[in-house]
Image 1 (cartoon, rainbow, N blue to C red):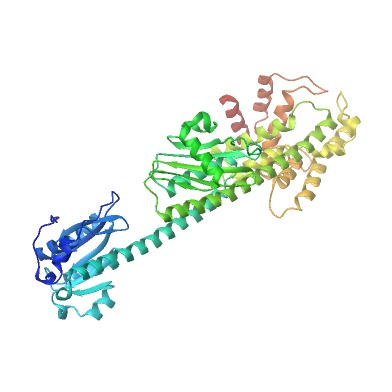
Image 2: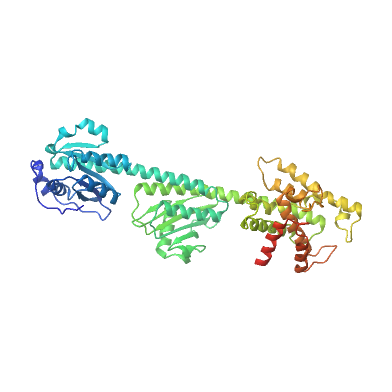
Length: 529
């Protein structure tokens, strides 16, 4: 395959108008990527004159670039090498009578490329009847060489480029919208604001590849309360050249010109699209404004700008959803904390026993999953729920008389039986609460834990005398976390044990009181720390 230079050879089929075309003034060429036109013809004069007529052509500010090949075989190689060919000027008869038609079929059927515009040019119209060729080979234009003039050639090329541009723009829009739909679905699954922000940065870099840097900054409603004072923007995420700016105020992390552009966009309430950078604003309930700053990318097409604006509008919704989700979790945690502290208050337990048990239960669950145990049970939701649920393990103590809970010495038989009622009572309370929710939550798991954290692996526990795997996993995990924390902290009926003594008891009760896999995970955590 060879590329020809623009020479001044002339061909008879341009004779009527080639002088006008050759003498037309040159158009200023864009520095952007040129449109690629593939010329497939075994007549070198056709290549020369096509190049001469279209040499100064520009469309949408972009020049044209020619690729010349002289057979159907070479055409296939060129198509495989250059994935951005916009137009093919295609001869029919070359090495075989139907070589050009086979190239057309290859483009549409083998390559499945419907965007390339195919202009069939033939000196033997009878060899390839127009209607049959147009319908059968999905040709976009059909020209007999004898009817082509310079103006008609230019018109055919311009029309083909226009169609190619529309088709590729629609395809880019479709792909972009698919990315936005996929990205939005991914973002709305983010469990926390930190993960959400990470997802925003990742998806933005996917939408606009090639940028040198990206940052996401926000200003709170309080920071923007006074219109006389420029708002204080904080960088919540940075990538590329802005990675070190994360977590800092823009005035201390960014050059003055970038800060000015961000504030100017905020002041005018307009997105800014400049030569190699852009700023897109969006508003959410949590923040007065947020700004995405992309720098070092090629000049953006209109479709890219629209996709960025659409995506950022979805990000605003995502901010609100994640914020509300986090507030809901905070409210749940506060409620659980209050219930757990209520039980502690009745039991005169000081400190943060319920929080420590919850955190330890979570860590044991995470370690079990890391070690490959109970992987079908321990999901991400399970890990999140067990921390809250374990904090409710002693909620049933609210029904136990204070004289029993606060007795400094050993309990007698009746008192012990009365105390043991708290497990069943706690389970009943939380089961009733869990029925108000349609799916499993920390309340339903809390019911398992309240009822099961005094069961023993050997079946000698209470209230139901369950053993082994019949005890819910959440109960087996919390049993160990509760007992260990109780041992190493002072209670009204005992001093705090040294940690080594408490660990010795855990090892002794391995397989009797405690699930061996839970003990293994717990001891691994202790060794790591």
